[in-house]
Image 1 (cartoon, rainbow, N blue to C red):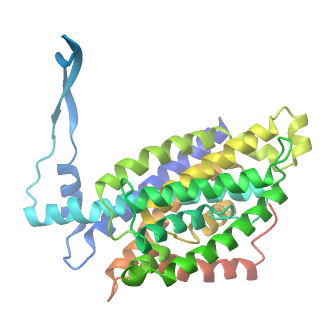
Image 2 (cartoon, one colour):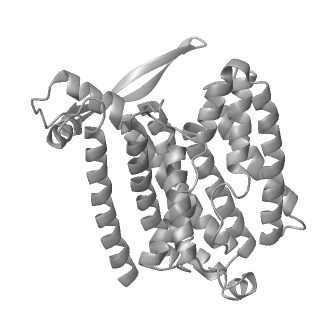
Image 3 (cartoon, rainbow, N blue to C red):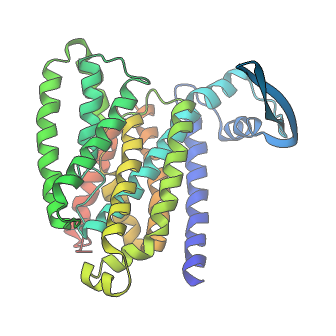
Length: 367
């Protein structure tokens, strides 16, 4: 119960901080809108279900018959109707909020994956890209830009598929006789990353007019965010977060060593496969919609580990929420400056000095 209480307290505090950052971020931009107006515009978009009706419809014909199918109709009511100018409501709900929401989802996903990877590899330098997921996504995305392909959903699908293929290749190379040594997995990831880096460089040479788009994607960006991106990415992120959180205790035990974990009843190889697969897919989903955004999955888990300790039952949810807040803040800085820059530049500019500060303070230890 003590763990649940601590986790709940931290979650409430971090959710409040995230909400405050969202409101402030949505207020900032070329058109300044007060936080109160932003909050009113957000509340105006809230709808609650008030009625459910079940009717019957038909599909077909199937042969000579029409097949009856039940259809559920939900009635919605908007409880708030604040007087907000249409222009401000459009700016907040159609332009700024999709980008902010996607930034929160991507930050949540990357921090989750980074926390798991650091525990999985017992390495403070581990991050979501360590097994080639980001490089695989980059190959898929840059290939689509350099050599336009007829792929449903285009660049994002290619990036997601490339990320999954890269992660699967690393796993297959590192696995022998049903066992996947962590050291071999790490080395295979480095080798695959290096090879895919060469492929990316070759594709960039042939990108022609798409070179600028490819470079911006590689820097990480949220410029083209839409509610569709959020609707697709958020469920994947939340489901996989739930799966990874369910294995937080097992991840704690794995830190003791695989032999000790096995003696304590942990199915080591199965747990490693699930942790690796969940981290890879959640990273692939984030990178597919936002490009390669560095340092979120590296720095945020370190910050939260210093504050809440190494227990992944607390560290995983707090890091995820802190990652969401951090990326929303970073993207706010990226878009409200004199000239908008890709958010990956901001996260690197903030993350690298902070990491060096931790090193100077000797705050980065072996896990």
